[in-house]
Each structure stands twice: as C-alpha cells, then as structure tokens.
Image 1 (cartoon, one colour):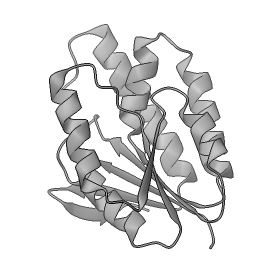
Image 2 (cartoon, helix red, strand yellow; image 1 turned 90 degrees about the vertical axis):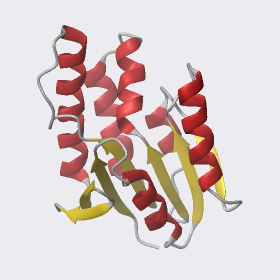
Image 3 (cartoon, helix red, strand yellow; image 1 turned 90 degrees about the horizontal axis):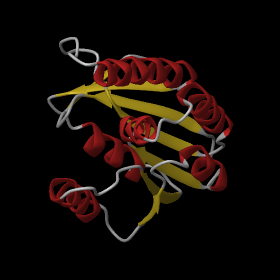
Length: 170
C-alpha cells in the first residue's frame, strides 16, 4: 500500500469528521484513530462518546492530546490507516500549556511527511469568521491558519467540507 496524506478541513458540524472516517474505512489496512480531545467538561465528554460510538470494532484508539508527532511516528507503517481528529484541538491543548507552537508544528509536519501509510488529518477552518476580540483568540486563529497552511502544503489531497459536502482544494 502506498502512503497518502489527506487533509480534511471544515467548520464546526460541517461533516468533516464523518467524511474523514468514511474515507479511512474505505481503505485497506489497520485502522487507528488518534484522538486529541480532552474531556474537561460534560459537553466534551458527550461529544467524545458520540465519536467513539460511531467507530466499530475495526478501530483502535490512541489518545494523543499533546504528543501527537510522537504518536504518528510510533504508528508509522505501510499497513496503517491513521485518522487524526483533530489538529485544531491539539493546537488548543498546546496553547493552553504555553508550549512552543512553531517548534511543535515543525515536529508535527515532519512526522506527517515521514509517515509511510495512509494518514487522514482533520482540522477546523477558523479563519472565515469575525476577528476575535481578545489576544488569545486571535493568536489561536492565526496559529491555526498557519498550521493548516503547512499541513495543506505537504498533503497529497486537501478537502474542505461544508454542509456535509466535500470540495476538493488540492
């Protein structure tokens, strides 16, 4: 199996995760879901539970809310189909830790570029809205936009999902 990098972008509730999962399940290989979400409240616990219920017994789940590049490297292999959901939550986790975002993004893009199996990465497109009114929110929007650009540049295929419909960007 030749490796392939698919990047799936979209807004909240756009259908991007569902589309990414369907694409992953259409491929041959060991299915691994790499989760970046952290359940800090009841709403997020419910959201995570719904996503877990959507995956059947073929899926193995790895939690990587911060150590995402290392998780990707550890799972490398031509027989793997990796679904990473989502880069935006991973970035949020790093921002809240006051981590070195450029260095973390360097490690992530290196891991993605080196991955030899199929990897599908999901992220929110947050730049379509209004300019946020506070420094942290603007930093998040800017860092997410820069990360999305870097991942799109190394992806073989980029889709934007809106209203459940994928639009091929690359």
